[in-house]
Every structure is written in C-alpha cells, then in structure tokens.
Amino acid sequence: MQLGPRAKQVAAIIGADPREIIFTSGATESNNISVKGTARFYKSKKNHVITTQTEHKCVLDSCRILEAEGFDVTYLPVQQNGIIDLKELEKSIRPETVLVSVMAVNNEIGVKQPIAEIGDLCRSNKVFFHTDAAQAVGKIPVNVNEMKIDLMSISGHKIYGPKGVGVLYIRRRPRVRVDPLQSGGGQERGMRSGTVPTPLVVGMGAACELAQEEMAYDGARVEALSKRLIDQIVANCPQVIRNGDPEKTYPGCVNLSFAYVEGESLLMALKDVALSSGSACTSASLEPSYVLRAIGADEDLAHSSIRFGIGRFTTEAEIDYTAQKCIEHVKRLREMSPLWEMVQEGIDLKSIKWTQH
Image (cartoon, rainbow, N blue to C red):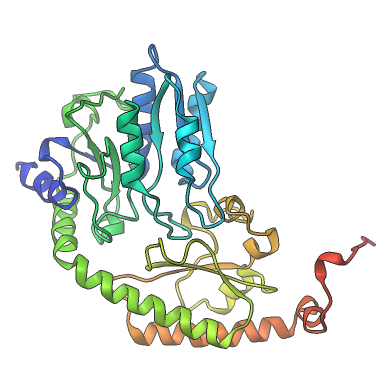
C-alpha cells in the first residue's frame, strides 16, 4: 500500500509538501530526531542550540545529551505569563547557533508561543527552527511556510489518531539535514529506518483530515466549555490562580492553582474525573512541575495545581459535574487546613517563622 495519500492528509493540515512528511513512533521520537539529529549533522560548523525552560521533557533531555557531547545549550527563561521574550531570544542567537527549539502550545499550561515571530527571527539569522507542535496541530491553525518552521513534531493520539505514531515535518527548501537516530533499511528517506506501521499511519492520516474539517467547530466549542469551567470555579472559589497567559492560550488546556489545597489530595477526591497534577509525561515524580516553577509560581502554589484537559468529546454535563465537584472538595479540603484558617484570620503566612520539632 502506498503511504503517499496519508502523507498528503498530514501535509494538508500544516501547509507542507507530502515529501516533507516522515512517519515516526510519536512526538517524542520526532523531537529526539529534530534536536539531536540536526545538531549532530552540522556539528563541524555549529555547536549551539537554544530552547526554553518549559519545553517537554524529551526536548530538554535531548539537549542535556547534546551538552554531554560538547554542544552549548541556552535554556531561555519564560516570562510570568509563560511566554518567551523575543528580545532575549534575539540576544541569545550567535553565529554558531544551529537550532532554536520552541514548542507551539505548552502541554501543562496551554500557552501559545509567538511561533511566526520566532520563525522570522530564525530565518533572518540562518538558524533552523524546530517546534514541538504536538498540542497545536489540529487544534489551532499551523502553517509551516507562513510561520517559517523548518522542523515540526506531531503526535497521533493528540489529534484523536492512534497511539504509537507521530510525524516529523522536515523542510526541503531551504533543506534541513539530520543525522538519523535509527540505522537500518533506509525507510522514510533514510531518516527513520524500520518498517512503517501501515494501520497506524492510515489512522493518523484520517485523524488529520478530520481535524482539519472540524477545527473551527471544535475550537469554538472547546473555548465555550473552557470558559464555562473557569467561570463556575472562579465564581465559587476564592484564591484560584490561572497559570499562564489567559489570552495567548489554547483553551483546551486549563491549569489552575487552588491556594492552600494539595493538588494530589484534590486529585484523589476527584478520582472519577480524569485530571492531572503536572503533566502525564512526568507524573512519576512528586516534584512540583518545572513548568510552573519556570513561570515563577511559588512552590506551594505549584503543588496545588490541577490541569484540566477539554477536547472534542467533552460534554457540558461533564464540565458542570467537574466544576461542582471541584468547588465542593476545595471547600472541604480548605476547611481541614490550618493554613487556610490562619489566612482567613488575616495572618500573613510568609511572615511566620516555622520551627522544626
């Protein structure tokens, strides 16, 4: 069976040429090939990579590996709204910079980075631009030519396709070369050897086509549901903080901190609702989210955060149920908290000198 029609379906949603589509096992692999592959291919000429402190773990870990190989990596901080400062990025670009990797939509707090502006900056400095668009493709309009994107990672299951498949978009003109991570029979233009899993690729193509048809409808619906959830919670719960920029955001990813409530205990109380504290990708650790720390959230607020994911199949009834349960349990957990009691009495917790017994 020809994979061509599937590549066409994927290419159409991002404005690419089907020959620029490489099928992988998911966005994690696409990110690895983009970051490590590009840096290694051009290492005789350039040895500097720029990324942000709030990237997905697989981008950050790939950068750590490059550092161990002798590359220089700049981890750009983000502002309090979660968005990078373009002036800082511009200052960080050097003659030896080979790649800038900045995600399109953050997987924990939903903020959208200024991708087109970053693309302009990279192109004018002859630096390759990679974006991890797992959370963006199929949800917000993405065009690789208008945004001057050279490499892009896409995930199958984030657009309601099968798990275990993803895409790496890699530009032909100006051409980007990568060192393949996987050696073998030279499938996918030598960039990703190994037999391509036909059923998964068919599913991914169909998911892209559907997402393109439904994007405007899904987008408006998710936005309405997101507003409904936030409005209900904020109206009934004091001291709820929304993490990340409230405007430059994808509404399907809502991250709220409930002051004086431990995020994990709220999750346990809401166990019939699928939510997360931090992201699923790093949920094995009880460390507060590094994304929330990067936007300057206090450690206690980082620990009290919950991420709500709203998508194509979320209903109004589910939103209302979640909001109502959330309000109920936040009130209950706060009533049990001595800290909440002290705050109600007007005590400034930051002024207290705690002693250990």
